[in-house]
Image (tube, rainbow, N blue to C red; front, side, top):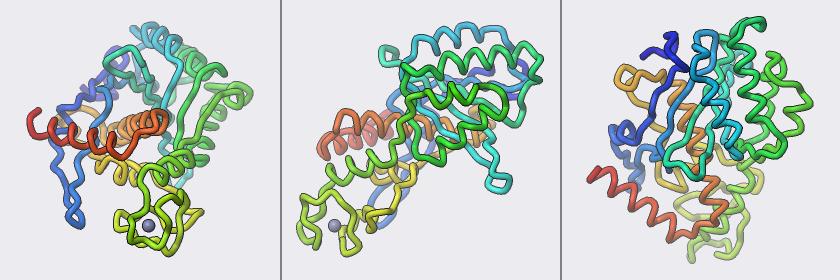
Length: 277
Ligand SMILES: [Zn+2]
């Protein structure tokens, strides 16, 4: 199904089996695997082609959900935010929901679908809820929702938006200590330019982790998109959904304060799943 078709809420399941088509990659004798989500997700796209039938169920889900992961895509030339992906972290459920707000194909402000998308966003952006986002650039991209009249500035600025980039760096440095032969003491949680560890965390105290690199070094995984003819999901949507799920996975590791042993267990389980299905 094309995402531009007028099917009810353009739904696609992004299941783990799609990820398994990716092949492991080797770099400096370390093996990297395609991204493996904690839970499968179902994707909905919101734009001028979306059929309003069935969105009430999505609004109910948004109302019940208290935690979200958000990833934005920006056009490098125009610097405009082109889409915002929001994953609903449904703790009790076996799957999540991912909604893509397509800002390039917006409905007219007088249309019913514009009003419905506005309602959906109002149920996500409430001050009692939590939204995880990677860094400040991503957070600034959310102002596109204000400029396109989907949300008021007041509502956006009342939100509890938590940037994960710095907490991740702190947790990573604490969890993966420096090697014994490194010049930096194993107990240090800062980055130093004389660190010689091969798994190479950043070397400067002000270096900032990118999201793909955080996934790479924490879980030995890389962001993998698949042939869109096979899954019927455009590559940019696959990418933003995987970035949301990556944020979710890193958030869980940080919040549960996973140890290196727990990370290794997680990696072994992923490897097992890839081999045996
Ligand atoms: Zn080191």
